[in-house]
Image (tube, rainbow, N blue to C red; front, top):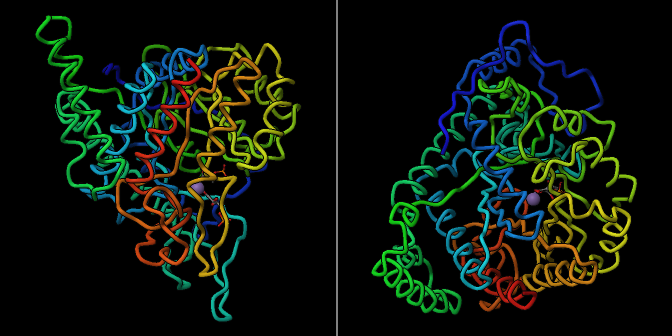
Length: 453
Ligand SMILES: O=C[C@H](O)[C@H](O)COP(=O)(O)O
Ligand SMILES: C=C(OP(=O)(O)O)C(=O)O
Ligand SMILES: [Mn+2]
């Protein structure tokens, strides 16, 4: 981890953001409260450092070259109440386990990125929600308003951005402690499996962990393994850069180079609803030097893809830009090939990652938003097939998951049924894979990666 100091922008050198149209923004009522929150945020230290962002760019360059695989995962919507030690620990353990399964199964470096420490704002399909004849603003994530269905809670409150900063800071603090303080030591692969509800994937993991243990002991005994290298993992934060008042206020200039970085997270992306070329979100991403992503849904055209490439990565810097496709299991095989084809040679200049969640959401009869595990796997399978045929690299997966034993997505070996959804449905936005389903997915994706080698 580099320790460069990333300072606030020098006085008089504030970046100009202009006033391009910005979709999906809060309507803060109180201008003074907004000003106070933004001023407070601007004075806070960065949450991540420019040097770390550059390291991640270098790792994503390896993904773009086909030499590494990206695992990006976490909640759809983090919540302030959800920032607890156990919640964060179980999520980190889950991602570490998945990464080990992928690394061991596929013999390939895995870049680990959490959807965490900033994933507190949501774009919505509708601005309002109606219950029993009462219409209120839709829930837009804890950065903007509360989930509770009352006028007071649903009002957009800028001071929430400051709360999100603190929540992100304490999340990152624990993540850094876990990943560099010995907990993520490869010699503890077994302990990451502890505390989870037993199931087939856990048992399979246990077996694999024993093999890894033996291999690590062998390497250590032979003097090949560097004890320090085994002790820690590089783990990065990411979120959708949605609420521009928050993201802009977190921009700092790198003291080494003077270049602006969004220090609210290592990797940030523009969502499917805010990726228009002439909009404020793409303009924002074009001005910061972090590694960035853009979601591409079923309506993405050749011109969108080429335009985004030119706008966001004019120099074609390896690792700078990642396209995250989310087409749906039934459409990926038709919609992705023309995009790869139209980009031609340029397709190899960016990383391509599959979000198998957002194109596969439906409502259960009980009214729960859900996804079928089998559709999620099928979209990833389609993603691999298409890339193989196009001779481009299927660079990774972007998944909504939790380490907790929730009942939000149906299917998987636990055969979770739509009738079970009400048991432990805890997400405030989209349904996440639970621990068992996440681990199962890792085994299936590792097999796909292995088959392609
Ligand atoms: O992850 C996000 C959701 O897909 C997005 O917020 C839209 O959800 P909605 O259709 O329930 O508004
Ligand atoms: C809103 C999201 O995705 P998308 O922009 O792809 O719909 C999300 O990642 O939670
Ligand atoms: Mn989501």
